[in-house]
Image (tube, rainbow over all chains, first blue to last red):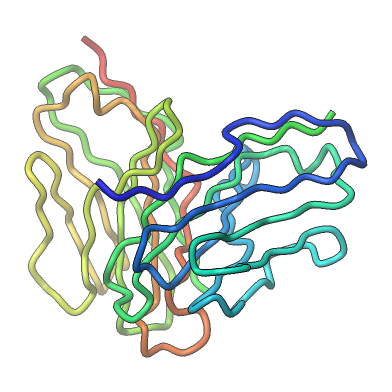
Length: 115
Length: 119
């Protein structure tokens, strides 16, 4: 089965450090989403791309977060500088954007802990 | 903006019994999709079932079925013959139709219901 691949699976780092999370969407999928999951807020959309172009990043703190798609097989989410409140599980999902009835397929997430 | 509400933070059910998880949503859209996702302790997000709002027939997927009440904006999930592997967080999610302009394709999630299946 095709899967969304996220790396790393876990990341522990100190406050102030740069964090980069990577996502390989399913081949052929042209929409990519970044979600953040916390106990308090649940699952929140941070940003999403269609055909590598950012369509909406209104859910993302602009001062420290950035999301890019250097090519169709790689999406990145960076936090610089990181803060303890960024600790969460970050999910990447991909889908076939021309048919919104098609479900988004999720990766296994990156558990981020900022000390 | 859409909101999704799951009013049951936790539920439990005996193995082989039936359980229903509640979900209500608020939207001004007429065309949209609804989903139930399952998140076991392994952290994966797994699609359980989906429903198109324009279809009156309730979706079913093996032991999983939904009760979709469009007028009431309700979308409950029924799990029949519960199995130990059904133990997980269950999230209800809403997605606007692709012709709805801004915000299409985005999933709006409820806070989740933690389901425990008891042997």
